[in-house]
Length: 394
Image 1 (cartoon, one colour):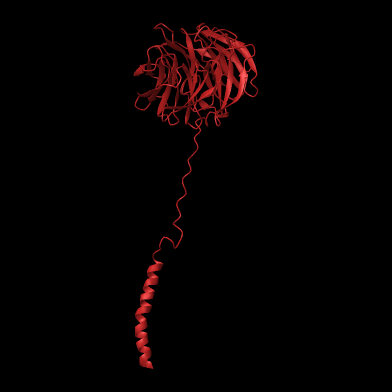
Image 2 (cartoon, one colour):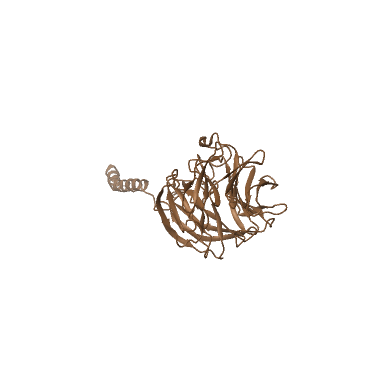
């Protein structure tokens, strides 16, 4: 009996050993169907982009301390600037500047307001500095054809938009000494611009010729390309959506707004707004775009009391939220909003007046100024720095 048991045990031992080894091997490995796959790390959520986050009410920079609360209106055919008190809604001063002032432009460092006097048709262009703490002008500086002015994102140069000479002049932002030039021969009537969310490029509008847009590499200071729009027209102002994805382009002849994907540089839509679509102002909370419809397709000497209006576009839906007519007619052009966002100020190009819209209701107050008022600015403005024009802040 003992021998039989020993024989059975000796026979069983290798089987037990083989079974144990097999179980150990199974414990250390897993076929596809024996357990759940390893958990994946959660995807990192993208931080939402809002390029206007620092331009909301309450974000006034310390650099604007002491600035008077005023509206500065360049009167193109009067060669002057009107100064309006934003509380009394009265013109409190008017002073002469250079020939054909087009825009009043806040400097990158928020210390100076520059009047761009492009002296249309002559070589007598200049810029006039204004001290925002006193509302007084300084000494004019000779500058070729400064139709408009922007700034490099780091403030290293002023970008003078030479409409007549078809170029961008990079100048010292304080002395206006010429540093370099970017030729733009494919962009006839180059005039307005806005910058990508990461400031790597800017898109400029081409008012004349076949119209269209010009994309400029700001880091390498060179032209990247020209985009022709689906309908020939006359592009004017341009602004970027809060999420940095879509550029809105006002077209005065097509009576509406083209939508452009900036990165791919492609047209993606169109929103009809009103006759003579011209200028843009972003609401103080960054959710809406105020569109000025000048009420005429004429560049100069348009009819006073025309069918001008303001269209309010909701950025999120790209839908029209409101339409504000001007009682008695008008010709709204360029402007900005007050620091608290309660007032929208626009020049009345063919009516020698300025419009103050109550942004809660669209109600309009008219103030008389000089002849052919153009790119007015409202100061001070919230923001870390100015990109130029009438106060495009970031």
